[in-house]
Every structure is written in C-alpha cells, then in structure tokens.
Amino acid sequence: MTETLLPFGARLRRAMDERGPLCVGIDPHAALLADWGLSDDIAGLERFTRTVVEALADRVAVLKPQSAFFERFGSRGIAVLEQAVADSRAAGALVLMDAKRGDIGSTMAAYAATYLDPASPLFSDAVTVSPYLGYGSLRPALDLARESGTGVFVLALTSNPEGAEVQHAVRAGGASVAATMLDHLKAENAGAVPMGSYGAVVGATLGDTLGAAGADLAIDGPLLAPGIGAQGATAADLPKVFGSAVGNVVPNVSRGVLRHGPDVAGLRESAARFADEVRRAVAG
Image 1 (spheres, one colour):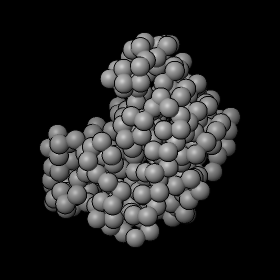
Image 2 (cartoon, helix red, strand yellow; image 1 turned 180 degrees about the vertical axis):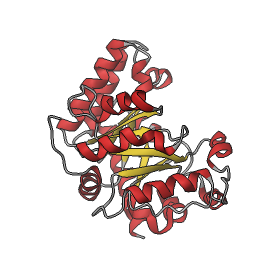
Image 3 (cartoon, rainbow, N blue to C red; image 1 turned 120 degrees about the horizontal axis):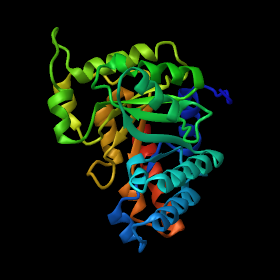
Image 4 (spheres, rainbow, N blue to C red; image 1 turned 90 degrees about the vertical axis):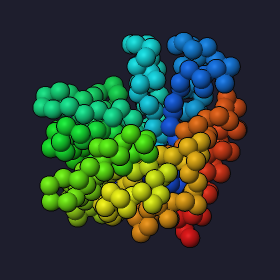
C-alpha cells in the first residue's frame, strides 16, 4: 500500500456535508456522445470525459464512471478512465467505480486490487460489486476496503425490474435475499462513526415495493440511489422511499445532468440544482 486514507464512510460523510449529497455518473454511451456532437471513438470518449471532470470534479461529492463504457474501447479507453479517476480525485471528488464485479477466490481478490489497492492505476475511493455468488465471495473486496480506507457498494435492491426475481426471493427462514444482503452490510458497518464504508445500491424508483423485500435500510452506511432524473424518481421521493435512513442516501444522477453538456456551465447548473433539491428533501 502506498497511501493511507481515512475510512471511506468518514470521507463520504464530509464530502456530502460540504458539497451536497449527489453522485453524478460518467456514462459516455454512444447515444450521449452523439447528443454532444461527438464521434463514437476514442477522441469523442476523451473529450466527453474530460469535459465532465472539468465541470464537476471540484464541486460534487461523488463521480461515478461506468467502467463498461470505457472498456468497450479497449486499452485506450481504459487509459482515458485512469486519467479521469486521477483528475477527479485530485480535484476533490470521491470516485465510485461502477464496475459491478463479482467472482470468487483469487479472481475476486484481483478485482478488488484493481479498484481498491492504492498502487493500482485504477485506484478509486469505492467500487460497486455483485453479491450473487454469495455474500461471502465478496470477502477479498470487503477486507481490502477496510485495509485501504475505501468503500464497497453491494447490489441489494436495484431499480431494474428483472432484479426482483433474485433480490425478492425468500430464503429458508423467511428473509429475502435483499434483506439478507442488507443485514450483512449492517454487521460490516457496526461501530463505524460517523458512517460505515459498506454501502448498498437501492433504487430510488422502487417506492412501496421495498416492503415486499422486507428491507431494513438502516445499515449504518451509505445507500447509493440510482433513478433520480431520467428514470422518473425525484428528490422529493427520497424521504418516502428511504424513511429514517434518508440522511445516508447518495442519489445518483446521470442523464439528468449529462444531457446539459457539452456546455460546462450547463452541467454545473444542473448538478447544483439536483444537489439543492436533495438537500431540501432530506432536510424535510
């Protein structure tokens, strides 16, 4: 290890308090590149990514690059991603790598090292992971996060409709799969102050369906909430969906902000508006 950090949960809480509780995705998919008047190639990818980082990295709490949109360009795309991660962190944003990795044993350990080892070119402040090879399969990432001061966001109750067939499934004993994952995360976060470093991904669009999963969202850690903006949820929905855990919600907005590019001022104004709406909603 080459860097010692405060625990991710503490750093995230500070960033949310200082910059507002907003996560903006960096999602350079082909349609969005076209909307910006950019070519669907490495030059367009680089221009898009550099513009988003320039516009937002010094003012939003979290930037969340979607790794797949960079991986599709091969090694040159990964190089753009590496630069974006470094530049975003240098400007003060926390970087959540949206990679959704999940595997077992040495392979999971390698994924963990890719994103959570400070010696890695893709070192990020946190990473998304999939627990559906069993929560215990995530142990290499969970342990490395604790060691390096980084964070892990576990897919728990995602906003895509297909997720329910797995996440709402009931285990022996009566608990749903999603509720089991949330219980594991609460145990992982035990004793952390002001907030744990082990978060869950819970869709802001789920509304009353959370009850069907028997979900207790009070995991003492962050709740990444995709679905604000283009997917239909609003900041005003957050207290109803998340209840007493709303103070730990990190709403994720991607298209709702990115559609205002490539104008830097437009990106900044949109992000600031979403952040203010979230602050007001959380404050009641």
